[in-house]
Length: 396
Image (cartoon, rainbow, N blue to C red):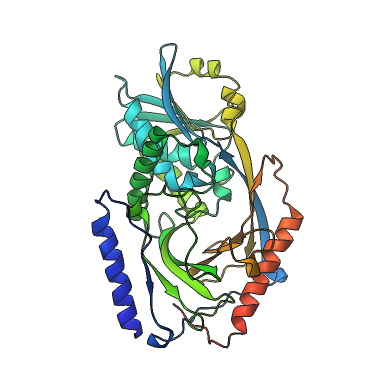
């Protein structure tokens, strides 16, 4: 199959996915396979991976709850308090959806005056969803972009990442999640472009297994949110694994995306006030009758939610390479690349982000040097092995 036929086939698969989005039946992941002699080997631009190209390492603490995020309302004296927090590593993915649902609840109040607590991605998208419903919104926060946990995210559409323990799922929560994921997925598609730093790229999942492993949360992700993919056979790709599964994915660049959300919020009359809250009773001093709590890990101390624990993650960045327009991840079953931790690379305009760590219950923001060494060295080995394949690099 030549390049034009391959792209036509991939486009048809994506179009079929779009029409299937209204279906309620569950389907398996759509993976197309081709015989090795049916197409030319895949050629990709090569990452220049070396320690002298490291420019920074960042650390973020993902707000995880074993039973999943909290999205509910309660009365606080005469005020309406809506909680929207605890998204683990899925905040960038789900925030437009949970913000939409939080704003729906807030709209049941007879006044259109709201306070949002927190200025990460969840707080900003919730504030925008409130503004779309005619609310006058003020954000109260201890920190604003670029100094939020959201700025430290790898940032792609990964709505089940670090989200929930399967044994803690309930039917009610699962229904809530699926609606939030569907709303967020559609919203992010509408934001693609340079202004928001949202774009589609290919992800290559590298594995020695002929079939991809199941999603980390089983059947949680609705079928209509799974894009079609292509499996490349041995000899068809430049990676040091037997197989490479290619799928289109949404990439979000935090430094661009969060600043754009702040600009949008301010341009629609929003205000940001730097303030710290110690107890829920501090909310009573606010003039707004509707309060949306989007404080992430802050809800542990603010509300006494001891189920909240940090999942410490860190990213090490290489110097940007504009010609790199694909993401790499490795299958959890692939011992050749995995070592002690998984690895993944996301290209961005502010650098090539290398990650793969998740340390439960670790509160320090200091980088884990051992993990940093392993992540960088594994990527150096990966891209050195690609160079040895002899496939001349070119843009995909």
